View 1 (cartoon, rainbow, N blue to C red):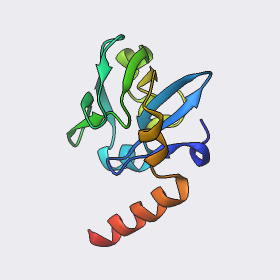
View 2: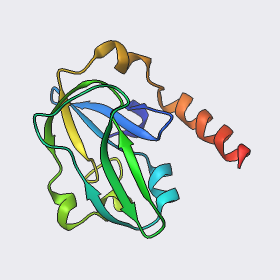
View 3: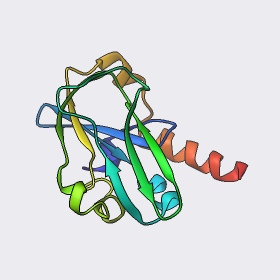
Length: 130
């Protein structure tokens, strides 16, 4: 996935269209904050979700963090590779480290998300507040 073409949430999730499905993961910034990822709990395929709903859990050497649905829709696929190699989230947060793919998304919610430039500005502001 090209980070420049993705949409982002204030909770550091990304979403982008891939072959008619919408892949979801956490941003490079989020994985850096978490440190070495040791476990990822993913939703069940077929789960219908609402925007903002807790959908997955990421555990790292530093903390556990919830992953929220950036848009409403239906879980169409999960990244089963993360069960055995959760470090893919650290190595390729925009590539093989994706969490799940959705279908039937709420397009209006998708269009309201931040683009790459807005997300970068948000992260810069957040870093200043620390």
